[in-house]
Length: 600
Image 1 (cartoon, rainbow, N blue to C red):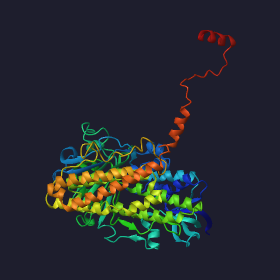
Image 2 (image 1 turned 120 degrees about the horizontal axis):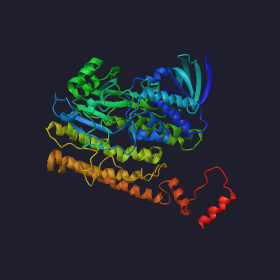
Image 3 (image 1 turned 180 degrees about the vertical axis):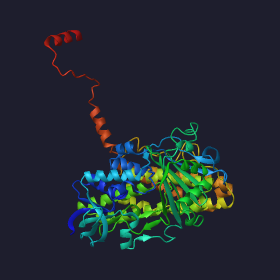
Image 4 (image 1 turned 60 degrees about the horizontal axis):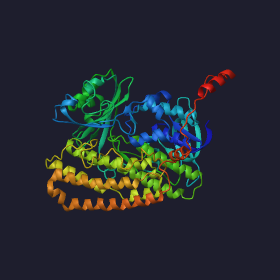
């Protein structure tokens, strides 16, 4: 017999997205009643067969600030030392990384601490935290669900598993975090997988996790002190090649467990050639022998997974009928830039704000929902567009290094400060970003890269971590305004307009330098290049005007309210310190008089 329950929010799926959504709701909305439905036992959760999880800045800030997990992460998961990229100098000669590859290494630790996440450990621990904090956990499968029109209740039928009870749940808000089960995707015909919507991506993913590897076989005696001041092994290493790239993610320091796998473009590498464990390992041995030697040193291969067609994109993420799709239930493109948890972070914070506004009966909640939905779907489209024409570029070191540099410019100049400033929760900014889509500009540059390759060109190796590659000591991983140093964390405080304006202006320099290096003076002076320069210049100036307006509006506000409060209190500081007695005993009268005489 089913039990009946009502909740403010029911989350279908207790993986990383569902758990993060539950924790964020609890920490943001006092007293909210949240339920999570997941069919897996605790043991199954702990052994989850996932890639690993290489996090980047948005994910790390979200987990640290919004979820309050920074101490947990420091104590339980390896630090991540940035993204590294490697291209073989000659096909068929890949015995050692140091001698046989051109490489881009992060030379220092990232300014924002990031982590290599063991998904099983993380999901197990986050599940336990949420249960302890009051999340109602239903161990079972979603057998059926119905969405009420408008603000009518939603219902979910749960079939208990592993001793869990059958249940009938009702809720005001329903979150689909069930990943590739696509619960809302199937029910509402909400998933797009056609070639046009996916920008032509036709990829598969295959990976193994191996335990007990020998890191020395990768590091070849230790980190190269002449190139880096950090670990090379604990970076997320990308092994690049024709029609593919491979990842190498260390996910457990104690057992030296590493996730190794890759994305394969089926037009070049059919799935049948890498779709079994033995075939994947043979592919790695033949094409990246240095990586294979490290895998071969492992004590065991823990598991193997193959996804034939992982790429998809939803039509809607936030419905007026109070259902929400987050994580893989909404979209997935490619693992190249480790965007997984970052995309979850943007969706989770947006979902929480919509639920909070709805529960508070705020009058503008429908406008928020409309534009949060448009923005999040737009971000998903942008995440997929990052991998457009990868099949033509991944194996070409010059083309791909310039591409990585450009995409880093936008990541650190736009998306990271956008999240830190919570600008994705500002309706006006959502409208501006969606209305000024730069996919055509990016596509035009991807076309330039393809043309350079076809002409046998070489624009040099562009390194996004070096400060001598573009102009004036700039490198993409720096921030244009001091939002980290000045702790400009209050929503809307950070001057995103200034960061964006500088990003547009630097893109002009970047574009002209590439045209000169790849195509010479004719490339620089071509009408196509000049039109793009004019476009970037016009928007850069326009956005700079937005920065002036922002500064005027914020002129009386401190960069950080808590620092300002401390500065105000400090005005009364007298500069004296007095030790307090710590003996726990009252000194005798004679001792008091002797101390007083000595002081005199």
